[in-house]
Image 1: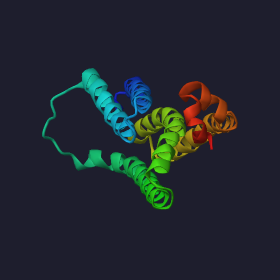
Image 2: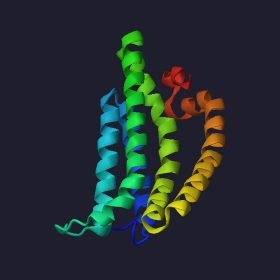
Image 3: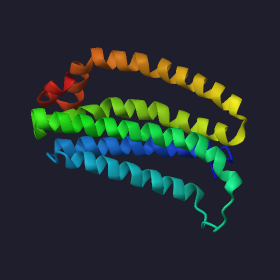
Length: 188
């Protein structure tokens, strides 16, 4: 509903606040020695905050109305989003399985925590773009959506590539400043 009305700022705000607070909690819990529970806390808090903000801004009791004609635009782009998220999830599970069987749970925990930094950057840039693209898919013809998708993909690359490159080069210094010397091995 909010997307159809063009209220993109609500979703972007919810994503930004939830991601920052979830990451902050994950780092806080990791500092306190929570181990893998730091990641659990991060995910739970991120999704709970996002749900609270979205419901506070646009809560409406659901009506029991089903219109098949309204389903098509959601399935066109929603299927792509769900497919990409499932592929990402399958990749992470495979990495975790291979990493834990070869290196042990401690190495897997460090690796999982290390991945939160680039994941935060990527989701912080891509989630608002996906929301805008979703609105375009609901309101515009398919050719315009495809053109917009390519523009957003380029924009995402232009934003993320330099940030990722600079972060990779300066990772040991950045990790030292934010997490301390105990996490120095996470720079690799």
